[in-house]
Length: 154
Image 1 (cartoon, rainbow, N blue to C red):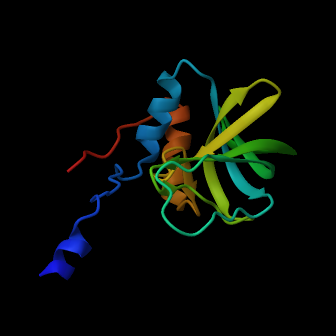
Image 2 (tube, one colour; image 1 turned 30 degrees about the vertical axis):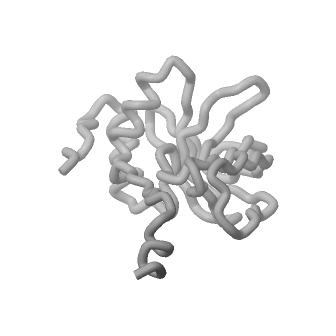
């Protein structure tokens, strides 16, 4: 009985994320006081490793990533020159966002002094990894003023 109490005596932490939805993220970025651009392509950067073990408040990790791909415009995604983009891997309690270098992403990047910054949080709020064609099509439709309704939350 003592063992059961010891095993369950710690804090019960869990992370609850909304299901990813390209239209919801597009609308959020459009309504933001900040300026966002949507990028589709790959990010190359030095891999990130974090210490093992529980850390209730890990600091975000910031890297410069090299982006290769396209940016969203009125006619959809169009190729742009490769560029450096800030990459912030942020955490909530002990859960942290992370990407593997070279992963294909659809990312909503915030305009900051000197360029753009992509934040990858544990819920992947602003980043879709290996986005399916229908996710890309949704964002393009939103940009053209077409249907841009988020899926209902259940």
